[in-house]
Length: 303
Ligand code: SF4
Ligand code: SF4
Image (cartoon, rainbow, N blue to C red; front, side, top):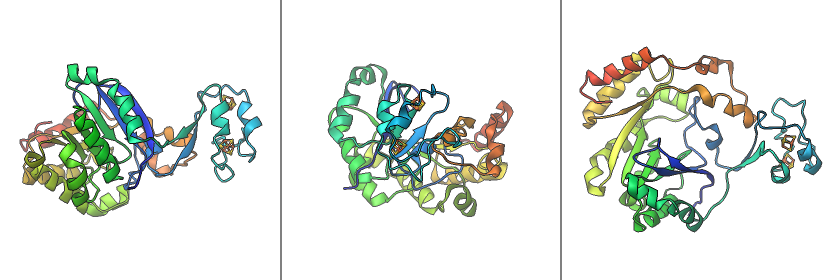
């Protein structure tokens, strides 16, 4: 059984489903959306991150690096070609400016951490959200976690990009899930490939199957559309998605207004972004969001 790395477990979240929730973020995603809000979650292996804003310039880290990988002249501070991921610098950084991205955790360790907040889930109608990266990347392992949560009386919600093996999910994950948030980003398959790295046939098919199977497995499902300037928020794309949703029978969707704060996160990972992405550094206007909403409302899809 493939085991995912855990990026973070965020407690007391009010943004990732109903009520008070703990969110388990897994590392690794089969898509590579150019605007990804969690770039640290894109790649599967462990990484190292440097946050310039937190660094106090004490130089402690350099005393522990045997690879000569740390250099203030380097725009990203860490030379990832030289770094062997020993994480000695992480252990000794007093400001937590250098951090390890992705850790192994057992089912039991995750369960112990999230069950501590069960009284809050119960009182608020909340639970645990499995997110990413892509929560279904290691379907069997994550399904086992969902089953354990389910057996402990915790409501489980999965956030997914929809790109997974449906048969595997139907066997190992869907029976233990109470809610699904599934992104529908771009309808045109060539544009989906261009901006998200894969064709969207499997995503559209999986969403339709999840929607049809919602009563069989007893979960609710919400499609979500991220509004990315001039990429997903065009009239052409939103109209095509709304028409697809109508065909599937969707009555309600969530629109996710664009948030540009992901942009600077790439620096921490030593990832240089291309000039094409410069246009994605601004906030989205309320008018644009409202215009997008009207496209769905006019097709009787609430949002
Ligand atoms: S992880 Fe190890 S090799 Fe990499 S920068 Fe830190 S101390 Fe150097
Ligand atoms: S130990 Fe941490 S705070 Fe000190 S220089 Fe290194 S990264 Fe910056």
